[in-house]
Image (cartoon, rainbow, N blue to C red):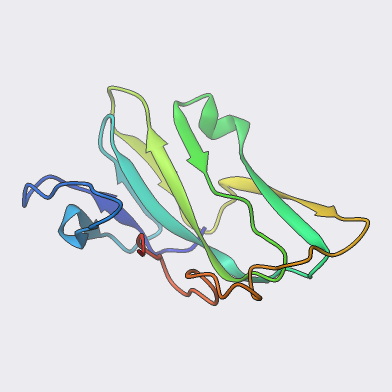
Length: 140
């Protein structure tokens, strides 16, 4: 993960609504590490910029060291012909503050090559997260 982090906060009493997302619910915290408050959530991004081939699907799994500390990583699959920085979601499921570190692996990516390319790729359908850079917040 890179040194760009966004942490959920309730300072401005923002409502989390995926259909009407308000970015006031996040604070930016760039740095070599990020402390996620108890029972909270942070976003980061990969250092790498991905370009997924048309006949490949990528699945992301969290690393066991983080999981054993109550830090859960979620990333949706990277679809065929998607490209960009991957936004990583880290949930701190513990009642304690939790630290994650930039420039270390927080997850691992599994690449699956299909026997044939899909009829319609992410690029074909002009997906809303195509060519994203930086930590990308939800889009409608």
